Image (cartoon, rainbow, N blue to C red; front, top):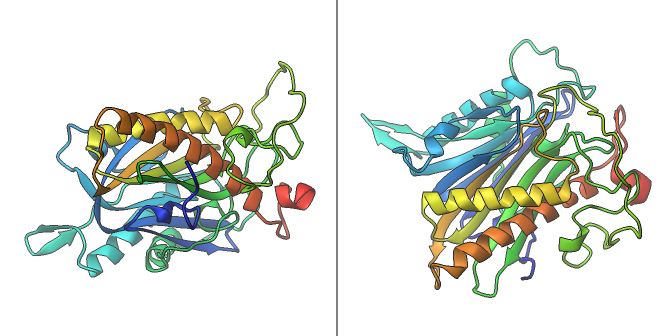
Length: 329
C-alpha cells in the first residue's frame, strides 16, 4: 500500500473537491463532485448526527447514485449548503431528468462550529452561497487544514481541520478519504505532538513522529463540548466497482479508522459518520478478497486523513484553540 500521487481523495479517478470559506463567520463548505454520478452509502455511529438525504443511501432505497456530497460547518444552518450545490448542479444539467427538469441528489452532513468565535449574526444564511462556491471551485487539488468545511473546526485540545489522504493497493485499486475533524476527543496522545494515527502513517505525511514511549493511563475523561457540539464527518472513496451494499460495508469498516485516530470517538456527544463513494472505474479481480482489502484500506486512509487535517491547521488571530503547527510544527 502506498500513497497516491497527490495523497488526496482526488487520486480516485473521476473525483474532484472544492472548498469555500467565510473568514468572518469562521466556517466553510467542502464538496466532493464526480465527473458523473457515483454509487454512495453511509454509516452513522455518532450520537448526534446532522444530515440531509442519508435515508436515500440505504441499499433497499430506489436511489443508487448521487451527483455530489456536501460537508459543511454551521450545524443546522449548514444543511442549507446542500441547496446551493443542488442549484449549481441543476444549472450544469446534472441530476435525474424529471418532467423537463434535472433533479440532483446531494447528500450532506454538518459539524457544529457555532461556538468558535466567529460572527454568527447573519441576516441571511451564508451557506447556500458557500455551497455553490465550493461546487464551482471543485478540482483535483485543494487545501487542507484551515480550509473548507474544516475552517472553523475544533477538537479537544487543538484546532481541527480538513484532512485527506489516499492509498494505491497492490491490485491497482485506489482508496481515498476526505474528513472534517471537529471531534470531542483528541487526535494526539495527550498534549504532546504524536498522533494516535502514527502506526498507519505513510512517510512523514503528518510529521513522522511515531508514538510516545509511554501512554497516559486510565483517567477520568470529561467532555470538553456539550451534546451535539462535536462531530467528525468523512467520505471514503474508491475507484472499484462496488455495489451500494458493498459501499456501505466500506463505510462501516472505515469507522475503525476514526477510532484509531481520535480518542475517544463515537461518543453520545459526537455526530460521527462516514459516507462511502465508489466510482466503478476499476473492476475487482477477486470478489472475496478485494472488498476485504478495500475496507481495511479505507480505515487506514481515514486515520491518516484525520491526523493530516489537524497537522495542517494554521493559527489565525482570534483562535480559541492553538493550532498543532504553532506548538509542534
